[in-house]
Length: 248
Image (cartoon, rainbow, N blue to C red; front, top):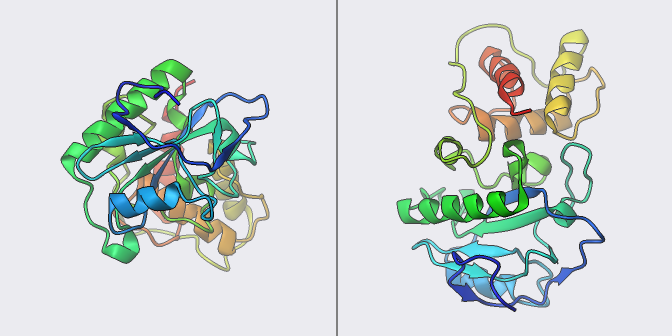
């Protein structure tokens, strides 16, 4: 196995991968490992019994390991959905970022680590022509299961470097809110906007647990100051702004 990029300094082959079934990668999915150290994460991602992998793992110090060739389907995203795709493993390149995650106290991502994540994403984007709105967090495509890479992940910094889509969130202010139990036309409009952007959400007009999870995922990515699953004025205004500003 040869590295697909010069940014991957080390190759550590994982046995956990399969065919892309004729599809080509058009997305990048970013994860945190949720494990205490990069070394422990590497062992798990290369363990045949774990049945999980990613194309790349970025250590806290910025060291990059390639585990699966980009031409192969790594097993990192699980069950998920984005913009019509129900098997995101088949169409994505997965990057695991060594970070203990929420259960580990949500430690900040080190500067050196984020700089390398940006460089790696820039390289992948250039080679595969990946659109900004297809650079996603695991929580975006599996909002009822996953919360990584977390609301403390620096999406804005990545976007300024040409990685992903981001707009400045609208300020939090008092006003009407949509939350669990709400129903009617305003909920339908909210669900439609989230679905238009790419989130997997049926238009039911009822603000149930799925809508709550999707709104929380949107907030983690685009309005990280307050993640509560409630569609307040700021959340809805930011959502409209994100849709209006997405690259064509």
